[in-house]
Length: 283
Image (cartoon, rainbow, N blue to C red):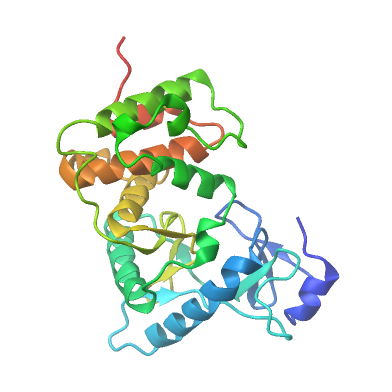
């Protein structure tokens, strides 16, 4: 996928691009900017100014502990053109796969985001992409016992998941109904990065650089659970990291994170999620 000539012109970068490794494989390097497709102007119009202010403030911290990829507007002060958004390229950065660093980065980021924004933007509730649908479905029932199998799945506008996925959703739902799990408090909702694992780089000085923020208005503990689950399943993190998520609010957060991923992954590796969530099917 290549940007249209208008995109290069408005972001004031050369038309030649180079592919970038990571993410969904669609972002490209053009000049000193990373151009990424599939961006929503409705989200970027409130999110990018906030992130730009935070990125600038973090760059002046002493000592520095965290960085954000700086969002860049067009020459006519738009954040998105034809679905493409831009951030400043970070030369020499490498992917971070260390779970301890990822978790610490998420906690710092979410503390900053909680201080910057206290009310959920209306446009977050209006999102209708597959990940937003899955996130909404994962939290749809106040109590797992209130939801039917249909309630637990994605909205009716989305394709119905295969039988093995629906069976896993029901098992997660049953696990949430255990005493002290689904009724445990996850903490207040706030702006979180719902896709942190795989979206943290280490710059030349070893500082974490957060990229491609996927915004959700959910508890920070849930976002951390998504990060840990993703790191164990896809980044090679030690499965023992999940032991700390075996009961109480952390178990609740992990199960909601599992629902979110199971309902958004296409295809879904049901066996991998069952092992990670401790819900192996009976032989």
